Image 1 (cartoon, rainbow, N blue to C red):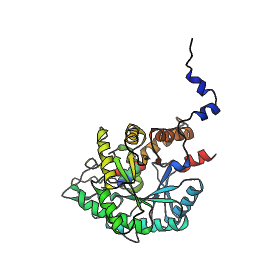
Image 2: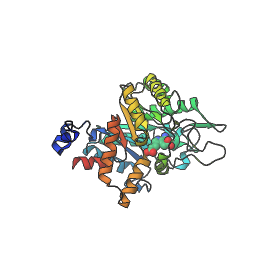
Image 3: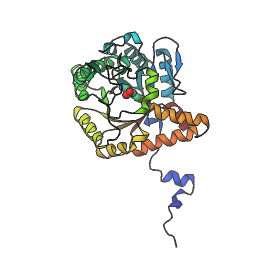
Image 4: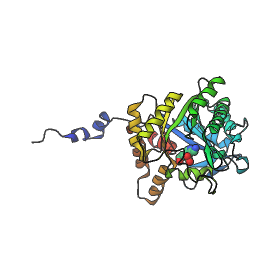
Length: 329
Ligand code: PBG
């Protein structure tokens, strides 16, 4: 005789809804957005079907739509033109730069939406690296100074949260100090604490034309600063250091192949945990759905729910808008 029947709690949708352990909502989403120069311009990103680079005016329009759908936050990335790229990143703290103008325009039109700004030099680097290069090596501390200037200029423009995605050591502390010194006591830091050197970033790099350049003199990959995907304990070390230095939110990246790290970090800390469902994860689902091999909508909702179940408080995802439309149906 069987007494314990787990299927009793799965008999129908009402019963299943009572025992559901987590529920995905639009409050969980941060939509990453790609911005470019120009007016009334929109370019598709071929490796990310359904995702576009847009000029500021169309970006503002998009933010209005996102907020109306219930998405409370965007994370901004800039497509910087080649003639503004160098080895110092100085365009990154230009008061009239693309990022600064975008932040002001969004704040003006959609003041309630939380603006997170990407802080990293790669879109501004002639080498496609997240750091300044000297003698063929990425130099940590000089890069931190640049990241601090960049962060302050984003805060001046109106960013709510600065999000350093570079993986230099000690940058959270330098950025926090710079923000405090300049009076931006309420601007938060979302630190990419455990960010792995991952092949899943491929489509993103083509979106911004920010891949490391294939030059003999410089490293061809980001393995001297981003983490090795063989490692898990090392992630804890990264997370605890960033918390000590003043991070407000901790990011784990990528998402789906790294959910063991997400759960481990969630169990170890009490700060909010953000997880990045990255460009390659997006591209995989889109490619398979286009072939008819996966159900687009169901796969999206399952992927994002599983990231939440693993421990994410917020999910950076290119699916945010589409998922919001599915959830709002
Ligand atoms: C670089 C940066 C990357 C992503 C966000 N910021 C790529 C990289 O580290 O080379 C990837 C995001 C994605 O793949 O969706 N600072």
